[in-house]
Figure (cartoon, rainbow, N blue to C red):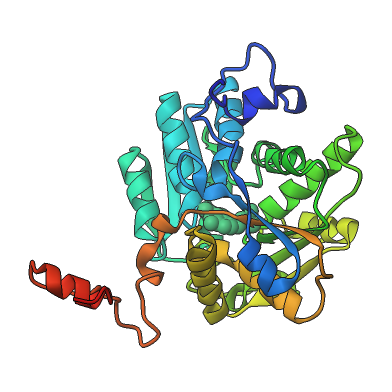
Amino acid sequence: SRQWRGVIREYASRLDVTDATPIVTLGEGGTPLLPAPALGRRTGADVWVKFEGMNPTGSFKDRGMTMAVTKAVERGAEVVICASTGNTSASAAAYAAHAGITAAVLVPEGKVAMGKLSQAVAHGARIIQLQGTFDDCLDIARELADVHPVHLVNSVNNDRIEGQKTAAFEVVEVLGDAPDFHFVPVGNAGNYTAYTRGYREDIQAGNATRMPRMFGFQAAGSAPIVRGEPVRDPETIASAIRIGNPASWELALSARDETDGYFGAIADERILEAQRILSAEVGIFVEPASAISVAGLLERAEAGQVPAGARVVLTVTGHGLKDPQWAVRRADGTEEQPVVVPVDTAQVASLLGLGA
Ligand code: F0G
């Protein structure tokens, strides 16, 4: 057995790198693709979950960030900059720290989950909270990168998409071909675009025989692609995808057309319900934005749009520990508090229904 070497070394021949490229890696990729029979029972489909929370900083962003920071260093960059709802900033901060360069991150004030913010702090990023939305943050990051020597590592940078396409390669390696359907959460639609590219390249390389139908989901309060117009004040508890003007909008629409795909919107309550189902019935804990893949499958299956036996892959993009507050929140808004008892075996036994 050997150690997984990160997506650049594992897929070097399929990425724009040479022997001289100074690879910046934390061992990202190689994530589990897990069968989810409980979701199969609910939908009639053959369901697999690509658990991207298993990446080094806990989200799929690491696949793109290894490539983006590697290429930035190759080009001599000393500062990378990004706008973020949290995960991109955590990833940029970690890879910049590993490379010995600076990460500057712009985030919407008060809208980033604590787990993600703590990562950016821990890895030493320069963090600026903007009194605006993610979309405002991205506008400013792009403006600064245009005129200053700072290297933009949002997914508008093609290196990010290149790194992220490797997730499709991994799916095909495990399943032996592309699935019938692939469900992903959508914020900027970079990942939706990246999977489509990965599958397309796998077909060209002879590794896959078909393109999956790419199904992308936005939160109902932040669903510009579904509505067909930007959303000025996007709202959702799925803070990772609280985005009103997706950067990869046009690319995503052409990817949808190419794959006979679909974009749908899901209400926050259905997102949280799907998060609970995935945790309690499959054993995979994800942040709310990631659970939208599961919610999307349940909704499409209810609508009769997923044929029995169809092979379905759900990408769950970020770990549940990133934003744990939703898992302990009860329907009435109060916090779940496990029962407290004195140090007394009989009482514990009784509470567990173990008899006398
Ligand atoms: N899921 C999670 C957990 C995310 O953090 C993001 C995006 C997405 C899905 C959507 O991916 O943008 O490629 O469509 N997070 C970005 C960030 C915006 O700043 O971390 P996308």
